[in-house]
Image (cartoon, rainbow, N blue to C red; front, top):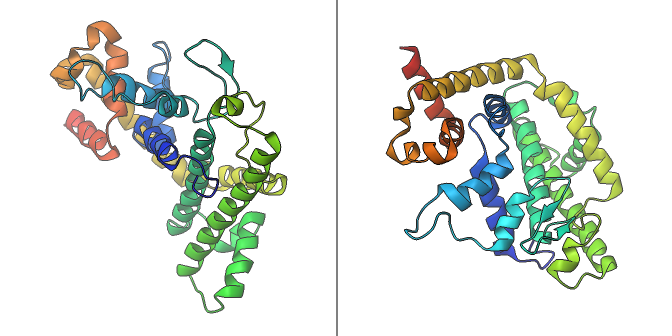
Length: 288
């Protein structure tokens, strides 16, 4: 955001607010909550972020929510693609703010770089296997040229840092060119664009698609990862059902919302705000 001379505070607020909607156990937890809520409105972590800041948090006595600006809430609503969202006047636009687009891709860079790091630390992937991927291979060569004595585990940390640097530099350079060529002069000009202005070069976008495919084939569907996700989802399902059976466990603040929101949505909101550890503690309590 700074390199593109955007509103840094807005970009940061959108990025931080987006995380408020994440369920316990990451995307597998989100899928399980969506399954539990299949007949009750579903669950989506982007929409949940908006619920948190507009409804669930109540620091003010006169109204619900955090009293955030429209631009922050807009960024939370469309912190995913494809973009389509209404504005207060009722007109539908294709793109959110540039800051919202930055937060979207920054989240993507962070997500995949952390997954690479974790997969190597837990030996789900090996550096040798990663040589099959162009993004990794290019950064590996660059790091070895600069740090000739680098060895594992420091080596793969340096490679991941180089990947992030390359992604950011490409994103800034390409986006600056797209913004200049578009001629946008206002936030509404940005919203009326038919395609995002924050974007990778075609070459890196293609390489990133190959990286995502590689991670799905070799990490996300790995038997060890699948088993951990299966156990996590089972714990979350059992805790969800336990709260449905005994709503008094939700506490006074949550139970007051049951009549208006319904029991399933209230339980979903409650569990969506839990940490992984707290879900495990509640699961252990139910298994005693």
